Image (cartoon, rainbow, N blue to C red; front, side, top):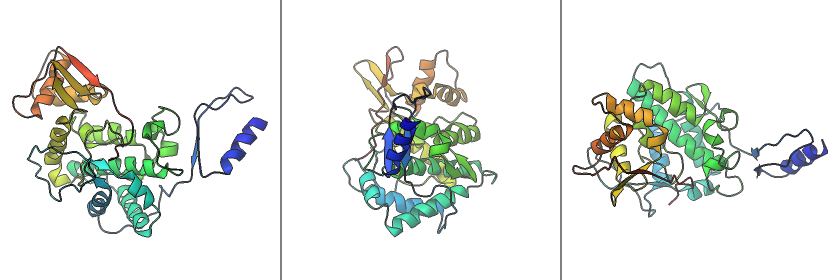
Length: 311
């Protein structure tokens, strides 16, 4: 009991304290602790404007090109331009306590909590949930950076624990009136709404890491959703971290492994193949420029980069 008391007393004197692999206690329990003073994630929140308008302001302030330059004001979703983005976490962390940033955050979270899953418009609901996922992933990083910017979302709650994605008790947010984790939003709600048949959603959500697909610096909108999903998928597949055919080998992101069934179901809506590799090839070819090569006989997965997707 003395060891437990000492650990808890030590934590009480700091605002943010993370221990991986605590020493065994008297009863043999070994665990991870993450204690961090965080801003409100449950509400009630005072909102203004719309979710889309709020996100426009947020993205304009904190999402930049890899070289920190501003991203284009307008995007032609029918194009296949070279496009990538980063999140300026350092700037966001520095401005976290400003009243304007706090008000904007509260309004976005309020709108996310007010999402209506029974509105009947599937595209609008999916767009809202994609926006919720991307904002919450960024907010988890900021809220858990109470002693300087964290290096990886994957380590919150324990080294390579990935609890930030699944631990509702510590990393859950109010979405559509219920507490949800990032995994709940992506793997349950969005997946169900798309019948597990639209693999483009895995290019639309970002995991706050360097290995992620591209963060669209515009809010997803129901009326533009199909065009936006195709655009962000094409943009992602232009980048080596997502796909590259080099020296006779096709290098692809691990998302094709993690969500293989979704990619197969997506392609199977219009085409049937005999092997998993052929399904992946068909998906990649569909969203890459004409003449793109893909070697189904020699595929390797790119090691996923879990460090922050910072500029």
